[in-house]
Structure formats: C-alpha cells, structure tokens
Image (cartoon, rainbow, N blue to C red; front, side, top):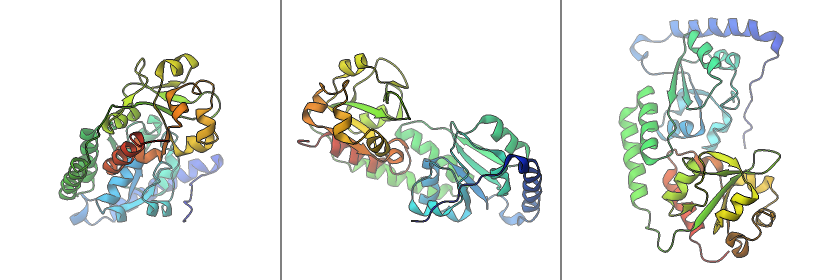
Length: 295
C-alpha cells in the first residue's frame, strides 16, 4: 500500500512559503492555455465523498492533492495529503498552486479558505446532505466544476439504477443504535438528522434514538431507552473499543436485545456515512447486516 505524504511546514517558514506559494499560483495561471482555461488542471479535493466522485467521473488526472478523509479509492493514497478537512492550513494548499479547491460542507477553518480565496484560488463549497438527492447534488456540482457534466449525469443514472436494483427488505425494521468513538469518554450516539440515521433508514432499519438531533455521548439512560436490536459502528470504533464482544458487554448495552443476540455490524466509515457514489453498495451491505439471521 502506498503511504500518503502529509504536508507540514515549520511555523517560522510559513510566511516565506506563503509568498512563494502565491507566486507559483500566479505563474500557473499565466501559463494556462486559454482554450482550456475553464477546465481545472490542478484541483485539491477536500472530502472523501468528493474524491470518490472525482474518480468515478474519470477526472483524477486533474487532482494534485486530497485530504485525510479521502481513503477511497486506494489510488488516492498516492496523492499528497493536505490534512484533516476541518483543520486545513493555507500554506500547504497554496504551495501546490491549485486552480480549484473542492471543499465539502464543514471543511475549514473558514478563515483559511477565505485566505485561499484572497490569493485568487477558486474554492467550491459543496453541500453535504445525507440523502439520495444530496448525492445527486454533489455529483452535479463536482462534475460541472470539472467540465464533466455529461459524465455526471451518467454517474447519477448509474447510481439510481443500482439503488433500484436492491432487493426490498422484508420483515420488521430492526432498531439500530449507531455508536462512534472519538477518543476518551463515552462513545457518541447518532440521533435525528444525521448521516447514520439516513443510511439506517435506507437499509430498512429504524434509528433507536430519536430524542435529540446530531451526535451526543451515550448515557446509560439513553441506552436503556433505546433497546437496540442491532449496534452499528464504524470499523475504527470497533477496534478502538476493543471489538464486538467488548462493545456489547458495556454496562449500558449488556442488557439490550442486541447484546443478548450478539448483533453488531461494523462498516467502513466513509462507505457508511459518506453519501457518495458508493451509496448503493453501502445500503446493500448494511441491509444484509441488519437483517441477517442469527449473530
């Protein structure tokens, strides 16, 4: 596996590097062929779902770097890494002389993206709505920005056809508790209006927690009220919390139907929550796990 290079610069060098980066950016703009000026040649992609869309459109040759959430496809690992999407810095971005930055909603900090815009770089903010319509919108925005609108419409048609081909789920909808570990303390549980709730619903399940919006630490009271039939976690959380047996044996979960039936499903984070072009595969995999017979 190719290890991605993470771009970091010592603080004392950053002012000089920023000046050099702006100069490189200006020179790159001056050398663009006017006949092809509308199609970006040096794009940075911030957001795993956007990176997947770029590759699905066949536009990866225009990408010079991605962020840390861009873990698929594996070929993206060969590109420079500009850091985590919410903790970007202007110097690494500008040093690559980009002519476009595709940034998923929530990327930032906003002041950094404003600094990049002030240097003359186009930054396209892409909304991140966890729905099929939201995936359509992402694809269209990215495709238009890259001059590949026809390919974008073809990708949307393929996505819709793959979703339509999924077998209908039979039987009662299981109550699903999504948990995600973010360091020390209680894991976070997904409430309403979250990507986790949306994908659970698409896969024929019901979110076990609907008394709050967003993500909150799982309290013993909330866990007892949830009574999940299945616990759903990202694969990193599975490892971070000690594996399936350890998670189901936690005091707040030990008495739940999920623990008694040993029902836990683990999936790749970006596949599960990214709402990108792999959404049909995510729904199919999750539905198979939620409706499987036995542990």
